[in-house]
Image (cartoon, rainbow, N blue to C red; front, side, top):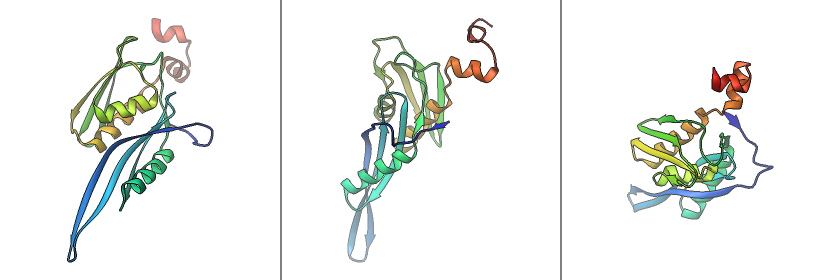
Length: 167
């Protein structure tokens, strides 16, 4: 998993989900908000964050700050992912497959935000298990961080790039 510094890249943020939470006290209900935010540069860098506050705008701002601290670099080849991968976090399972040019992002809400923020334009994805946006976002980032492109595999094995494909 490759961490990325935020100083040299321009990031776009995307709100995935916002929840209103009520705490019942003697004086009545006290409301607070939690926001899940995904940030990315649409060129292979993506991160997610959770912000909690008494107001929506503060929660989103805190989520963006948290997401900028958790950036990772993911391999993107010709606008798609290098290979099929399964990601898991808690009860959330996701399956991500590469797709041909022109397919688009075939994915649900939380997964779509992560994949588009990473700069992946053609992909087939399926969320299995939990539909909780927290788990789906974390499982998607898990699947993306597990992916390796052919150059990385060749370097890791210490062989030529042709030997990776041709055996």
